[in-house]
Image 1 (cartoon, rainbow, N blue to C red):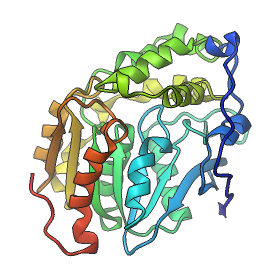
Image 2 (image 1 turned 30 degrees about the vertical axis):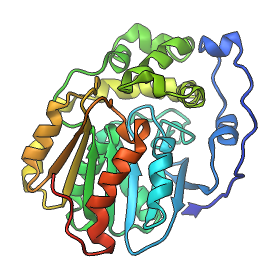
Image 3 (image 1 turned 90 degrees about the horizontal axis):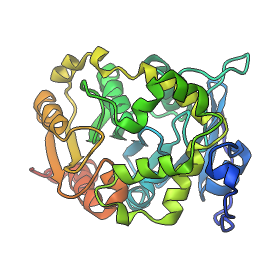
Image 4 (image 1 turned 90 degrees about the vertical axis):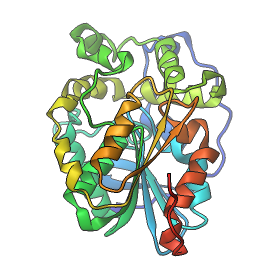
Length: 323
């Protein structure tokens, strides 16, 4: 099932975007995204008909799987993953329909709707394809939802759980996602979506937007403008009804859990950190002042320190951090 493909370690400078590209009238071809945004160690595995982009690096007795959030990619873990790979095997992937992976398609070539059941099938297949019998899951936002949901359904397969600004409790969708609940936006977005809107959304997930580099901003824009991605998001967003999720199962979750949250998260209320910590027995939490929805990308060293303390017992037998 696994189709491994190693890629080059350097990329050419990105050319200026044309007016039609900046307006979202054209899309970035999948092959172009692969050329620009694969990294040293990038691999691909066939899952549900798609070439799924992932990176598997490091070694050790423990395995960590990192799962990004809505409209993000495995690149959000770059600094965290490279550091953790010195002590653990670290795996991260581009969830469909995002990143280099892009949308899943059925046998007729139509884009699949990525609702929770589809993500459950996808992520379970990914874990099986890579032969991951037991791992620590680290998930952000949508990836946090997939992490705790997997831990509930596969209790013996999850060693530890880290939720970073995770989804799960009822909430109003962020305005930049909620736009896709409107039919005119869903219909027009695949053919016209100015990059200014995407850039505004990216700035909104940071606590301090001045920390965003031009290269990171360009990456988010081009992934969102990736071939098929906007159409897939239009199908996906109407299924994001967290009120239908059974979060009562968190009360019975017997997995050491760390909850990390940005106090300036504008997408998922920081109060949800308290709720996760209250629901999951023995869970610990850290609240980061001045950070937003993706603290591991905005301030990786701060998050890395807490991750290392929490995961230290996996390799050293030391007492985990007390927060």
